[in-house]
Picture (spheres, each protein chain N blue to C red):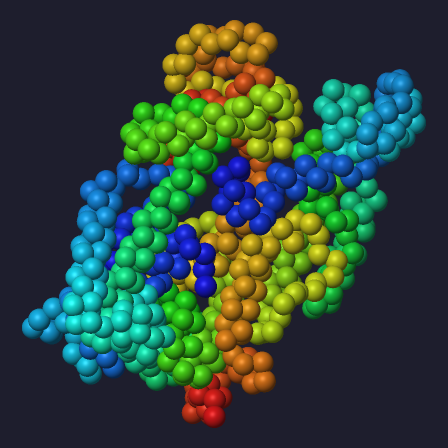
Length: 185
Length: 197
Length: 211
């Protein structure tokens, strides 16, 4: 569980999850297929994780494992972990998985998340270190936000080191200005 | 969907360069607060239904209860998003004080809401009071210093200023040999650049 | 650089590492006469012409800049020693040779401020670059061997700068491993670390799906 103010934690909880209502609910406009402002028992509705999670804990809904963790993704990850586009499945693939695992009761999901991360993080490291100068949006486009965070951690420390080794001016205008820095060389 | 706008507001802080601030989104902020008000009204009316039917709100688990629960969850979610929006902006604002000094350039200052400007003023005053107390400017020498003096080129017309050990006319493109601690604030504001031999 | 170190407060900036390294001692040969300096970090001097004295690098650099001394490069910074180290680094896949904790910072400082005092400076510089590259490659390889229940990484004889460069990544990677590995019950084995080959996908799948 991230901190209350954690932006990534908040955004990851906005990921959609399909739930089936076990109890009806009145006076809510969350089921687009319903005619009235309510949800019938047994309706299938797509809800953001933050509602689904709480309702599930109170036994008001049952949750389906999201499509991004389906058999097809699992097979692709096993075949060629580094080249699977997890970002298109969910930008918060691991966060979502971590939060889904306890409420769906799918034990294999834990193994799968762990396996996926371990098979992919080396690639993240190598890419980050070799591509320290050029921005590589092509690599990043396949990575989840959690992986991009790792990539940037590795990449920025190598870049900072290289900059120090080359030398040059030690003082620079604050990045908060948002202006393009003048070249000092 | 409930909470969608609040989430967009939070997303705004996540995109864009780190350490920079976006204009305060008054419009969206107020819309979320309105959404909260309507959740509150719905919540009350569902509770009223239950009370009229003579049901105990604590123990009853009927359709009205679950409806009310969803509104309650939406309220707390919206609150969390609004809080996170303010909190993360406040963090950036504090860092602006360290990087750019007491007075922000107009183009940045206009992005703050009036309460954020108040906050910056208060924060700045506390920091100043503390630095006065210990008689040390904590905002300089963020990079370990090498020499007490550095060679700089002025990038903008700053004009005549009084520095710690002299006064200088900082005309555009003029070069100076200044005390590092005098030059540092100008450099971080982008008004000067350091020349390296 | 301030902004960078703020962005990832877990790491020092390279400039900060250099600052720390400036406290390391180095021998100088003064060309002037000066009373001993009594400082918080210790007493240095007296300084007599042509008599070597041991001082912190920051002091050596300050005197050198004013033309008051020459700096004697440390013993390990000779072509002979560095060639040995480089060969040993290349021969061993996992082990790191022992070098001064701040060898990267010290060598850069001396290259920058005392280039005329270092014999064969181009050779020395390129040897150090090569050593650094070989070592860094090894660090990368050893980081690839994390597995799920790793809570710490032990790599002997890493230098300050090398640790500093990988620190942000290692911390985040370990956190992620801990989080994901924590979901898998203690009693269960973690899935096989080798990605199964394509034709064995069916077998691999069984491991992933548990029982």
